Length: 364
Image (cartoon, rainbow, N blue to C red; front, side, top):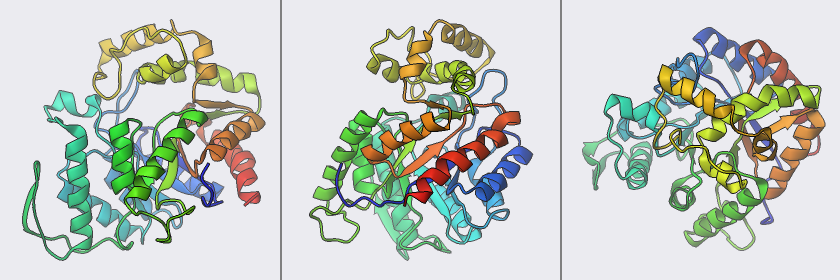
């Protein structure tokens, strides 16, 4: 791994699509427990089997900003189809001002469940997202913007007030594909792929850094062995319990449901993919029939797929060992939902904070 990466390891908690009262309570709780960041999935529809509730992410984050003092607040991730980039830039800037400079804008190329049922067009997703990023940055940093692109046209446009953070709110770009990694390298302040194994992450991070380096993007502007100005993050599901067998029992079914939405992971592990009808980006649209079918297929996946998958689970020492592999691969910011029920969430977050976060903070 490239020398010169920061030694600080950050840990973020991503909320499930809970009711507001639970989200608020958990945001305050994880800040008190020492988590560095709190993230909302920016969905129209929640990922679920029996319920698909989903509150609007930036509204929730701005409300949480008034309930917290330190924790960073981000989306993992927003897309640029449901909101025009000028509106998304305004939403993130508003949250940044309310939070006194704690907002992070996570950006991705979109998912079928949030777009297809509503007739929202998302053709040419990477090209469109790149252009949206250019527009957002211009509105955040320039007094007046004139812009004519393939997808967006601005004529004397401006955004006031500007974000509190300078030069702008950090942008974390999601993506595992070559084109989205290139987008992160050229336009992102952070790269946040989903559910990679450590060896794959290490290899692809080097590629992101190489592309960013060629663009002259270094933290200190000197190049050489210095890493590019991109925060290496990772979105990864976690289950931690005092006993390994308990954690494994908790993780098996939700992990299988998730892996079916990411069939490339199953393929990379060398297992046959039962179906690609639930692929998250292009196919998965929730309703009762789809949920029943998803649950049926999940039960056909062997447990070994979860054991070998990039989902992190186990007793504290197991989880620490897995996270160390990712740290060695270059990850510096973990963004994690926890695959447990709401009644176990505080207990899980507390155990993770006391055993895992403390372990990595103490060795900095």
